[in-house]
Amino acid sequence: MSIADSFLAEFNREMAPTRRLLERVPAEHGQWKPHPKSFPLGHLAQLVAGMPGWIANALTKSELELGGFPGYSFEPTQKLVALFDEKVRDAQAALAASKDEDYSVSWSLKMGGKAVWTAPRGEVVRTHINHLVHHRGQLTVYLRLKDVPIPPIYGPTADERM
Image (cartoon, rainbow, N blue to C red; front, side, top):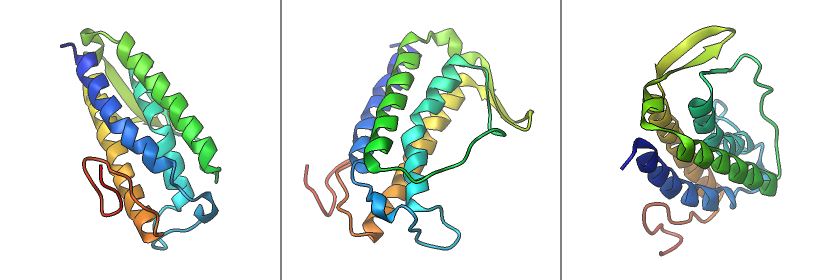
């Protein structure tokens, strides 16, 4: 099995429950946050929706510059799901097109032109998947605190059986 095939299988397994979770985000509570230092619900959902695109970036470019990031907005749930679907397709295409040797190429995260993290693409893709799963976990807590039923992710939840 190629590196791409392994990542693609894992990525697809993680994206299906992530989409189900995003579909349940109550846009009317987008500005709500569980603590003053926390990200608002709408911003966390927007982050999760866009994160699959980071994998496409890592596999098709050599860097990501965060200095020009436009920031977050509050978007309707349907728009977040559409963004997620687009970024998932981009990541799937980039993974499917990649070759094993691509995963040893260096990639850098930059801020103001300075590299804050440089690693081989294989490590970057792994980290992006883990990072997305981490924020998906945060989203489950936010939704639970808003009494939104949590769909199955790795197995049944208190709200739904598989």
